[in-house]
Length: 92
Image (cartoon, rainbow, N blue to C red; front, side):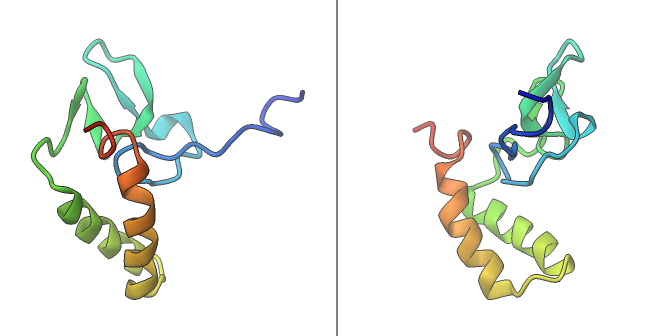
């Protein structure tokens, strides 16, 4: 298999952002990269917003998706389906 050809798309397991480049990966406390979370959610082994609720994350991400040109209703529906399935929110 050729590298990069048939790889699954990686999504942040906190905010669902597509992570297309390892430069966007979060970091562990020792500075190593963590491919499960993006740099906007996870840094130095901790979530940047440890107390954010699922609803607050939905609201935050909806704002970014609307800025990128997506309709708010579409963004909210997509996030309502995706976020609860992610590792951060599905751990309970």
